[in-house]
Length: 117
Image 1 (spheres, rainbow, N blue to C red):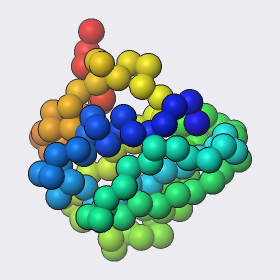
Image 2: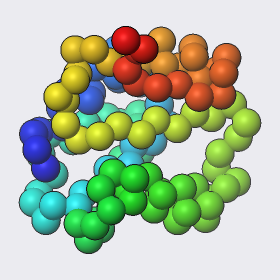
Image 3: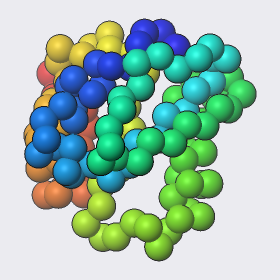
């Protein structure tokens, strides 16, 4: 709601190689405004959910884990990785690349978007 979401596509999934690695994108909107600039791709399933504006981003993440991943548990395998990304790019220039986060998550089971400072 803060800004158009096109920066997510530009930063993380613009290359064809990365598009092949992404199976789906879920966008949770809580502000009541239309979603602008959501990524579009013929190769990626895009889902939208509208939730009440409560609980900040943690509420959205918990919702996805509880309702989407839990109900579609057969859809996800041991090699699948889930990224949670906030809708603003205030610290965008410091974020790790898609490849860096993917490598860290594959090695450690978890990756944080911002490098340690």
